[in-house]
Image (cartoon, rainbow, N blue to C red):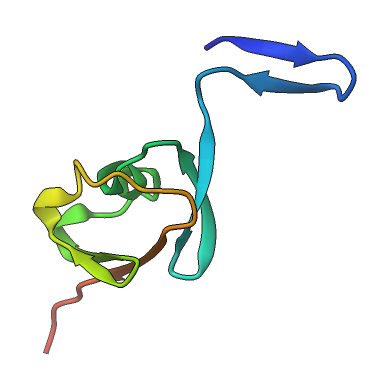
Length: 85
């Protein structure tokens, strides 16, 4: 990872790791730019077999999670499926 030092603000900036924010169940979450649903679920450490994901009020089938690219300010609802009776 290549980082540069910003002398005036005393903060470091990382090159090549642009971030964006999406809304997940009402909370702001920072993800890498061009992240997929699958990458977000991994970042959140969620079991991908027992969930449903909606992006901007559109249900996204599980087979699209690896290719569906998120955009800044997308609104996601992630629901965990629970079995029982």
